[in-house]
Image (cartoon, rainbow, N blue to C red; front, side, top):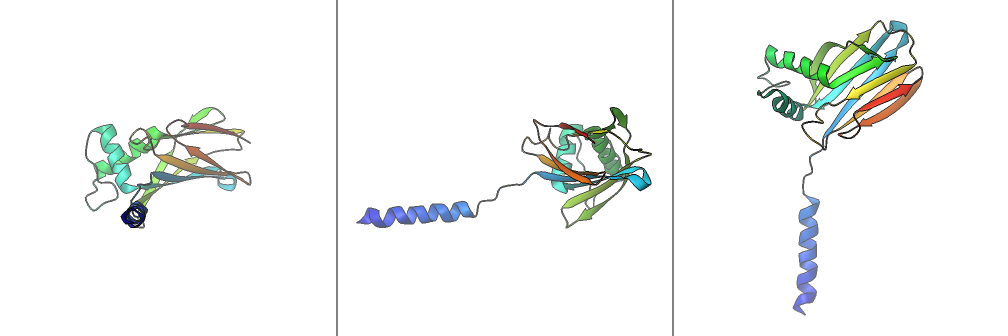
Length: 168
């Protein structure tokens, strides 16, 4: 008789405790838009601030405070370096320089970075390499939405999938 009561109570206790467990979500969202009329590729990156600072600290062995009240110009310079090393684009097989424009904090915990590639004529291929935070955390996923020539495609970059070539 006791087992009929105890086992269901243990089951309910287990389910209630596991329902409230917290699982950290490691996701970056990137948008790459080709603006043909401006001959420009516009790039927007949304990255969690705490993950970004942790990833940069691991890579460069120094504490950073990007997107916080303690942020310094050295932190911003390191951010630009980090983005340039971990997010690259090739147009028709040629590496293109990405210009960092600005950044802002969104919803208190997300850093939004704006960049662009100027002087981009019509192209046949675009190769994107996105390793943002992947070396810091194997669970990191970077969803990248690419809009060009009236079509939208989405690519998921992970530890095992860091580069993608799209043909137009």
